[in-house]
Image 1 (cartoon, rainbow, N blue to C red):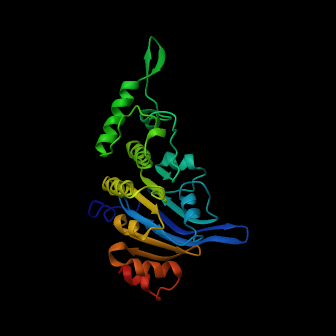
Image 2: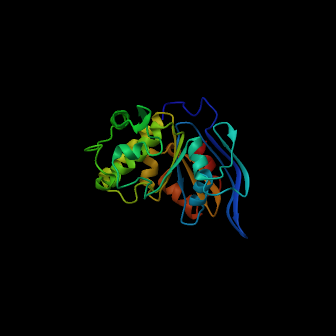
Image 3: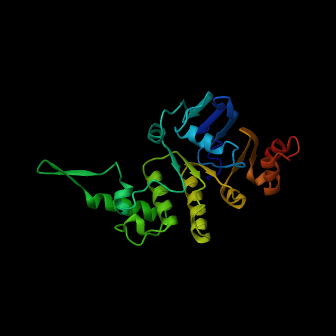
Length: 263
């Protein structure tokens, strides 16, 4: 992240006392933290801690029962993922959202096709779309054998790179990565982590949900730990350790550990 990027401006995302109940079950309680512009935040916690529920609330898949969400300077409660995406929030899951039976260019411009008119008849401007896709892929340092290759023939890492590059190209502000490297090999994961750093360097904020502690410490500026639906740790990654974070996740942390680590 560019030095001081999120210190010189208001946070991109602020969550204030966000709660979510499903009937009598409280999935989230008083979730409060913020994410700076160009900041990478790792969201950690055991199964059932509330990570997926929180990601769905931020991305419009669920609505909070109570609390306040401020995104890009405006109080928001997104009614749908499409509404969140229009505001600049993208969620990338393990299975991605690409159409595998068409090529890279078609995926890159899905829903945003460039059209030109020939004697008044609208036709796709294939060359313009190809050139824009090639530039975006090259600028990101992604290696794709051919942009005319159908996505089904690409590796998991290449598919993930296409989705992230597309998000950056179309002016995304916050990307939520839910276990993004679970199905990838060592080399593909390494490239994916490098891409996260490159995205953040452009001022785009990143939230990564992962069970792999080493990945969190490689890329995250801050680590937010959820346990039983509450925030039990909000620490700068440089001021804590994997052992400390494990103690927060399991509930074995000493009182004040998270606050001390952040000081």
